[in-house]
Image 1 (spheres, rainbow, N blue to C red):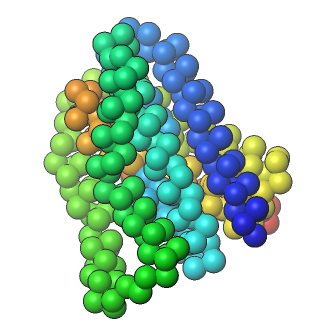
Image 2 (image 1 turned 90 degrees about the vertical axis):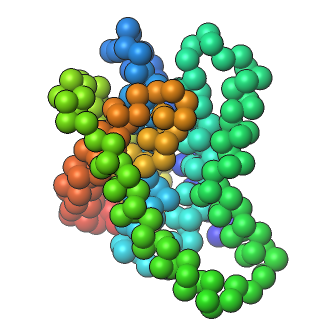
Length: 254
């Protein structure tokens, strides 16, 4: 079981790195002179696994898929933050040591990473969690997505949305179509089936993470474009994810 989970997480990390590099090369090829390359790259690969992805998995597979999905979220959250620093750092303006410091700062201050680390610590040490804390956490978790979307919606700029149509459509297509199709297809080809294949699809079919807006803003990127990509993919993912599930179920793959 442990070996199977390790192979699954290993595939998630390798596929995440490969798709990041594919997106980075594509953006630098099609948007050579754009100052927003980093934001477009982040919009093309960074999925909202911690909120929407894990919710999809919980609804589809229940507790049996939730445990494996949580491991995937833990691994990819570290990966996404490192990749975000790489793509959002202006080329030539940040040294290798500065980039490492930014990665360390981002990872150690990321609330999702802190929560995952504490959760693993409590699990390994078998520390009991009081019911009142668990219930409070459940209430807060239900508020997370609405609050994140409210903040994103408040940053929307319709004028910029029309001006950045090419960048928005490019990032959205990579996130909602190319990522789930490519990664799920490769996962099927290497032998993943049922719950594992379903988790990989749901996680990669999720819209762009709300954290990408915060990351873009903190690193001096085009936060308005980041917010527009988040909003568009969040709405459009309800259609693309549903179609993807129907196709997978039609072929009895999940």
